[in-house]
Image (tube, rainbow, N blue to C red):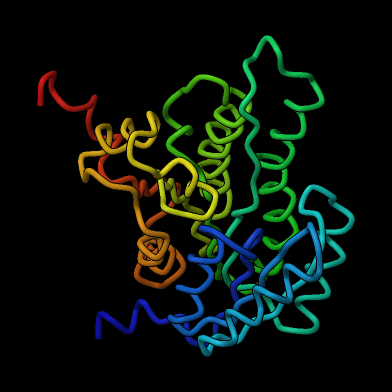
Length: 263
């Protein structure tokens, strides 16, 4: 049955930065498809515990670990710990990330480096720690959370765009190196979604809100659970011959230069 190819039953999925927002939405989808979910956070154990209650309330088997994805020693330690306590990681979603909205001429080098390390270097660190096990088993799925800024620029987010553009190419190079081991490495590029972080912007009359409505052919913000299908597809056997691709879930933004004048 074709639908059986989308099942994640018996799989273990690590989703970084999945205590809230889009990371949680994707992790929930993987769990609903049958995967055992392992979430990562860095800010506090309380936040991880609160998230785990939400997963488990929905019948999802979930585990949580607190470590910094930019710390290679910590990542190595915790990947080994997860493998011992939960099992080998079949699916990795590199979702953890930050953004700093600062004009380039005002951005400190330390701020630039923090964004690059979190959004580009950490997917390298975590993937490198997980890949040997996948290579040994001749099976694995790695999903990088890219962005429309992997393709486009925007004022004040140069470091983020540079990192996400680099992540697109890291995706392609990982796919190139690891496809022979039956590992698929792909990316998801979310558009603009209705999350708690964007709530202050999503009010009538707000200039950015109106811009997004007019710039998006769908004419609305995405709902977080609308990322779930893409995540499950790229994590499942249904995408066994899909490799090195970025799947943009953006309501059509990247398909158009915008609405005609006067429309």
